[in-house]
Picture (cartoon, helix red, strand yellow):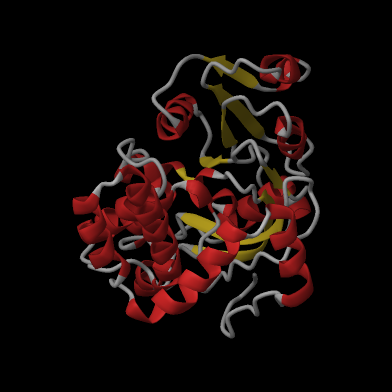
Length: 320
């Protein structure tokens, strides 16, 4: 059933609530807002949860005040903001879109169409295009696979968060985002709900995701990896996903450098033990780490463009 048929057969189309948690996001928020407001799907409730921004965020949002709900108040972080938005949501289908992400014009339509046509499916995910902070295509690869619970835990989180749409039943059954997590809260939620209710992959749900050097999911370093490791242990997985092993080496080398500067010798002994958690990654990972540290940023970027080929997608990836 396509959207035209959906409208004919469903005079009351499902309401979709999209929540955007924002904080000092004025530089890129408007593109995000317009990607929601200009959807081909007509029945959308849009809630922006602002954590008390001090930049031009409010002025940008107020341009569209008659088409969305804007709440600006202090929060306890992104997870708290998402949860407060979801608690306000009145939609049958719920999603969250970060301020630096952009829906394709028909993303919501494809999500709703699939969920209406497959009433036993409680959530869906799709494909993403990755760009740099200037909106230019980059070589970043994020392989996305057909649903497999064990692969999600052992390979890495192959579900791109802004492509996910959930029925309200999911939240009613499994609760809200874990506010104790600061980096892997989406990953944990997919593991929590996916064990009982597998999602469907819908390739026509597409988003554009900006990759910043200081994006939280990329800059959390050792703390982020520790958090994810502890989270996975809750679900019976004792190791980090294979795609994070090189990140672990990189983060531990940063710790070593910091502890050397401070003369924290006891901490260095722990670092040495941590470094060899993934021995196959140590040599190559150390070389890459040294390259990043010793070369000026601009030179490193040029070198990568000239000599480093884009990573090939995983052979069984559906997209990415």
